Each structure stands twice: as structure tokens, then as C-alpha cells.
Amino acid sequence: MTERALRLGTRRSRLAMAQSGQVAEAVQELTGRSVELVEITTYGDTSREHLAQIGGTGVFVAALREALARDEVDFAVHSLKDLPTAQPAELTLAAVPVREDPRDALVARDGLTFAELPEGARVGTGSPRRMAQLNAYARSHGMTIQTVPIRGNVDTRIGYVHKGELDAVVLAAAGLNRVGRADEVTDFLSVDTILPAPGQGALAIECAAHNASLAAALAELDDPYTRAAVTAERSLLAALEAGCSAPVGALADLLADGQIVKEMRLRGVVGTTDGSSLVQLSTTGPVPETETRAMALGRELAAEMLAKGAAGLMGERAL
Image 1 (cartoon, helix red, strand yellow):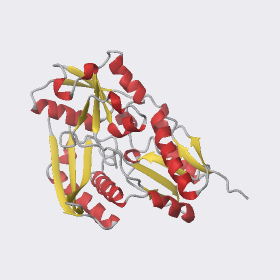
Image 2: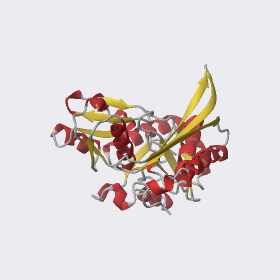
Image 3: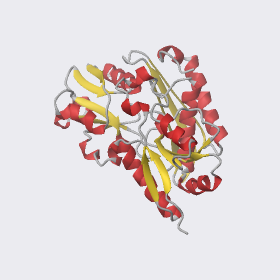
Image 4: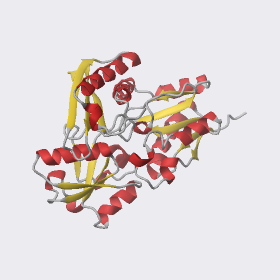
């Protein structure tokens, strides 16, 4: 008897469908079972409010998790940066595949780079984190920009530039790569300039904790280095008691000596959205061999950031 198709829960957006489609192909190859996409609408997809207003945390995830709990889907794919930092006991994070490009990218009119934007340029982003760092960078380089809050999918956001309503928009490079629009990027923003959101560029594959055989199969897609990095970043976010719409950036990267990966560096930033105050720190340690060690690295850096006044820059903290 042929085994039934595995049901993969996904948001309906073009980006979500593209990344879920890529995971579906990998799982099909791995298990020999066909995979069907089950489209689910989340609150974050239907609300027209800005993410900071609706809380950000979990708004793109809750409906997918509910479908898993009700056994309407077998597993789900999320953009990892959308996941709340607390993991429900009834679900398991079965795999974190190799991370895509974590950088932010600029799509500007007339092929402009960030440094070439005109005085007073209107730059669209839905992220307080991007606003804080873009404004801080502009200030430190004697530029004047106006950050404009926007919502919508990739096409909608880029459309603001094409229609002349904005001079530029900032989006995740990974998303543009996944939907085949990387050729629209006019400038990749270095992580030395703008730290990404914790987990940016990574995917999370989640299934019910009781489904041990499926979890074991999905675990074949896990990349231990990516998991260690995003675990440290998310631990920092959790220790700051900040939701995923807070103005917090973090990136853990691996430092290699030749071919041998020796250390992990974790960088974090918190700032006011106008860019007038930033707390930016980093720490380096041995590559974490356990999830516990990766979490400890995040907590240690968060404690240093809080000691430097980070809490006062985040507005309302997630309790």
C-alpha cells in the first residue's frame, strides 16, 4: 500500500510558498514520500497594522502551529526569524537547514547604493531594527534619510520604488534570492553596517513532538552550524525579553583558521528607531557543541548589553 503524502503547512505568500516548495522537494528526496503543500492564512497575513503595533511575536506562526496540534498538517516551515523564542513542549524544531544569505538588501531607484541616496531619501521598511540601524548609519555618515514604515509582500514593497512613492526599500536578501528577485538588489548592506534580525535567512522545520519517526527523518536536513548560530542569536533575543518586532539585531558567525572552524562570534545591537542611541557589543567563544552552550553565549552577551542600558532603548519589552 502506498503511504499517503506528507502534508506540509505553509503560509500563502509567494516567499513562503517558494521556501516551503524547496523544503518539500528535499523531504520528498529524503523519504521517498510525496509532499503536498497545505496553505494556511495567518493573522500576520491578514492584519494591515504595522508589525510593531500587532506585537510581531508569533503572528505568522500561531496558525501553522495550531494546524500541527490539530493534526491537519504533518510538519510546517517557518522563516526562523518569525518564531517566538519559547518552544512549545508539544512541538519539536526538527531541522534548521543551511542558512541563506543573512544580510539586508537595498532596492533603490536608478540603481542607487545606500551611500548614493539623495538628501532626505524616503526609505521603506517594516522593521524597527532596520530603522534604528539605518538611521544610526546615516547619522554617522552625515546623511539625512527618512525611514517610512511599510507592510506587504516582496512585490508590494518593491512596487513602492517602481511607482516612485519611495526612493528605496530594505528587504532580506534571503527572501529576494528565494523568490528569484535578487537581480533587483542595488546594494547589499554589510553585516558590519546593519546586523540582521536573529535567525534571518534561516528556515525552521517543525513537527509534532510525538511523531518521532518524522522528526528523525526531517533531522537529516539539519545543519549543526546554522542551528548553533541561530540558537545563540535567539537566546540573546529571549534574554533581552524582546519580541521579534523589537529593534534588536544579532548575528553569530563562525571564525575559521584555514579549513578548521575554531570559534563563534556573536554580535548584538539594540537601538532607538531614530538611530540616536545604539548599544552594540560582541563576544567570541569556542563553537558551541551543545544547544545549552549556544544559549549561554546569547545570555552572556545580553547581560552585557543590558548592563550598558539596552533595556531603555527597546520601548515596550515582551513579557
